Amino acid sequence: EIVLTQSPGTLSLSPGDRATLSCRASQSVSSRYLAWYQQKPGQAPRLLIYGASARATGIPDRFSGSGSGTDFTLTISRLAPEDFAVYYCQQYGSTPRTFGQGTKVEIK
Amino acid sequence: EVQLVESGGGLVQPGRSLRLSCAASGFAFDDYAMHWVRQAPGKGLEWVSGISWNSDRIVYADSVKGRFTISRDNAKNSLYLHMNSLRAEDTAVYYCAKDNGRFHLEYCQHWGQGTLVTVSS
Image 1 (cartoon, each protein chain N blue to C red):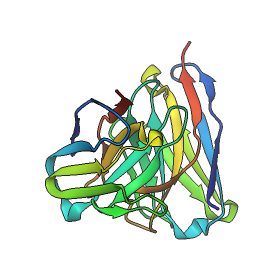
Image 2 (cartoon, each protein chain N blue to C red; image 1 turned 30 degrees about the horizontal axis):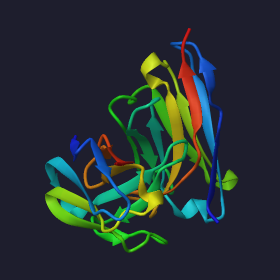
Image 3 (cartoon, each protein chain N blue to C red; image 1 turned 30 degrees about the vertical axis):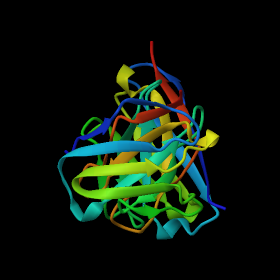
Image 4 (tube, each protein chain N blue to C red; image 1 turned 180 degrees about the vertical axis):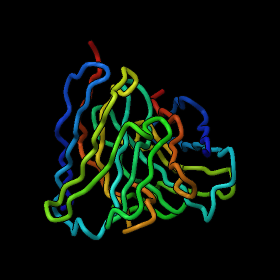
């Protein structure tokens, strides 16, 4: 199975900062089949990005995804107070589907 | 509005069985693949299983293969997860999620709020 490794584990930033989250795959993810999710405490995850770079419905344009092959990035251009959360990547190009272990974006 | 409501969680002893249900509304249930994803307390997300719109394609994570069975009843707009031989490490919140398409088991476009399963003696 494809193992996804996210880094850093925790990102300490201030509102207005730029956040760069990494997701590295143990094998190439075919056709850029990679998604990103946001999860806040006590809530279900929410889809942010699919196809490595397409924003889901209703997602602000400060969120962007990029990458291909084994290296993918989620960028939040200017952190809003509601963006402090845990972010997960997920690959769906290979079976079984797998998630990364998550990156927590916390207020500095 | 898409709604997914899980039920059936609770406290169960190791080795016993449990069946989770997910009631779907607000979309054409029989047009979409569905998933189960779990999250152990304080841990990350783990994909458990997926099923295509017509049940022709079913996939499991290695950690549950042979113990869990996913199924769906399109007439009842419902998704199920039959869990047998439960272990302590199956303790988690179990989420039902709607796929973006019919067959290929891709990403989770919408999520329910989850149901907690605790396996303990």
